[in-house]
Image (cartoon, rainbow, N blue to C red):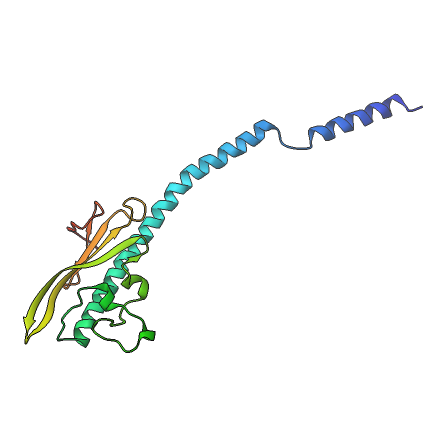
Length: 178
């Protein structure tokens, strides 16, 4: 026969093992609540950082377009500036650069959509010199695909190279950027 203390000690160790098997429902709910609170704080901050990164990229892309326009004007003086992103783009596998495919911009930017922004060249001023059309000015706009998500501000530039912003995310650019 077993001693009463041995039986009682064996019973206690089984009970304590059963209690230590896992977490209680309350502990799991507390952990889940903490995780949800952290996610509620982190996700909006992450999205804001992403839109800021897209805006920084848009400003850099506008600078690249301005540089490509100056180079285009230098390479094709009879044409002046390019009035389309397609003319500034092009693939080197398609042959030598030409006024319709100058190969000055990467293909994704020449397509007009990059990093959450839509890019367009407009307001081209055309004059005719020696029966040749020449563009003497242009405007480039970069607007967010989804205002508030992919970017908060719209951006504009022209042949002067000054980049301005529209706080509403459109093309009414009045604020110079530093």
